Amino acid sequence: MTIPEAVRQLLAIVDRLRAEYPKKRFTLDGRLVGDIGEVIAAQEYDIVLHEGTDEAPRCDSQRWTSRADQDNDAERGDVPGGSHARLCTGAQDPQ
Image 1 (tube, one colour):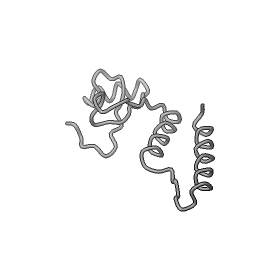
Image 2: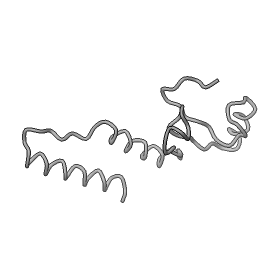
Image 3: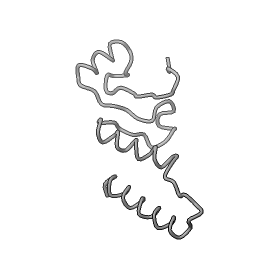
Image 4: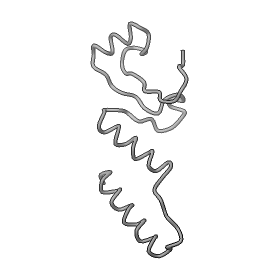
């Protein structure tokens, strides 16, 4: 199932729920929308999503970089072993 297909199905379900229970809005918000956004970003920007906080407590994801970026990051000490760069949105710098 693709994200667009899933979103269309979710919206159809919301429409049916609203028709059955007109006093409720049944909005798609919160965690669901954030998770959908993370999956889209992972697909578009070559990001590897982490499954849980035990795997990377300060980061939700990682981005694979070019070899030149890996070498530069490793030289600065930013990336252990020069294999990837972490995308840490809203987290404190782990230094």
